[in-house]
Image (cartoon, rainbow, N blue to C red):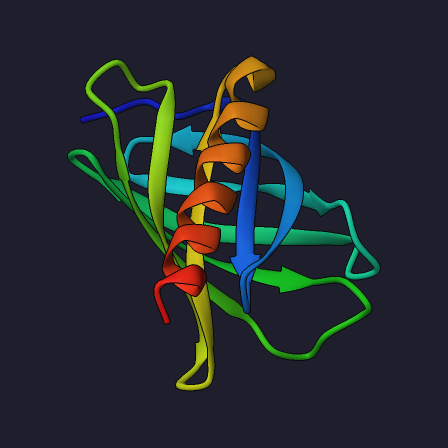
Length: 124
């Protein structure tokens, strides 16, 4: 089983717009708890979930800005330094997300995602 306890820097995309976040994850066996601070008006949230093998799932609940919880699912890399997945609020609000233990590659990941989006848009 992967151990993802620690501080993570990540990005989620909603309608193609990236939002960065910082997460502090605490894993005890399969149980996962922690907090997330979004770099947006949404602010701070708490999370509860689980880690099964290399799969992670959790619910994110904002303290004050949104009554809706956000479900995250993801896959943990073999070196346990990267998670990639999908978040969902309801059938109309969902998107990809990713997080890394170290933030130096986030700008590169964001640039790659933006380039893919531009490429897809220009093909239409």
